[in-house]
Image (cartoon, rainbow, N blue to C red; front, side, top):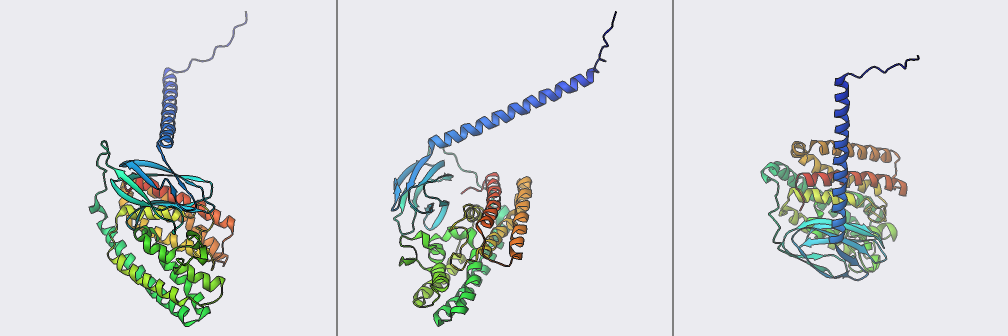
Length: 391
């Protein structure tokens, strides 16, 4: 009789260990499935409860909205023929925004709103603004805000940084406009980049003075008649005259207005009330501008100082992160580690492009830098939510 060899019996401890691992894997899978289901359900709920706003050539449809206080989602559809932005403003302060919405595309914006009346921009700066009415919600509890005592040092240091950079901007603007008004074309061209660069350092807080920002840094695409629009002024109107038209003719009044706006900015920054949430939200907004290569990527469309402006904007964002980092490291060390990596990656990419000795970026280069900036913006958004720094 042939006897079939028997496999040796597994030790009972090994059986129990294998069973425990199997149960753990099942629990992990179940948790992942539950999480994914909740995320999907939340996404479907957001989509079904979102308020649709269509931006046309001349206005928003509807031009007046009413929502309840608390968290709300807006779906912004661009029905015009050019890239547009949509903003919620409290006076001159931008609370939330979506930029570079391409024609025919829709973007979503999730925000948390306090009761009150707000303005909304509807595409072009020359278009009339709409209204957003936020009504008190019966179930809207008090929003927990961070303990500001922890941020006192960072806020004070950032205020000093802003004052220093604004002083530098006024000095650069004075030298720049002086060359423009004297008719020295080559000197004016050489003095344009320093003025643009130092202003870019202020980008994270520019939503707090949106009226002056539009006057100083508004691009032609934001105006109905583009470069021919009488309201188009500031840095880019001067840039257009110098680099595209190759002349200082007729720019003296534009230069005077620009210099007056720069002086007003110095006063405004001195009185500005800075909060950590506005620092982070503004940083996210400037980075998201680079997500879609196009008019919004480089802020010097006629001088083509793409890399210089990009680096200056990242420098301004980095200042915000460096000041908030010690506080953030206590709350979200994993996100801080991701942000450190993001900044390193961006710094290395900028260094590589800088070694090419050209400020002009190709579309693939813009796409590469824009992708890295988007990753950085995403991690800053995660930090904002984790630290409860949503506006």
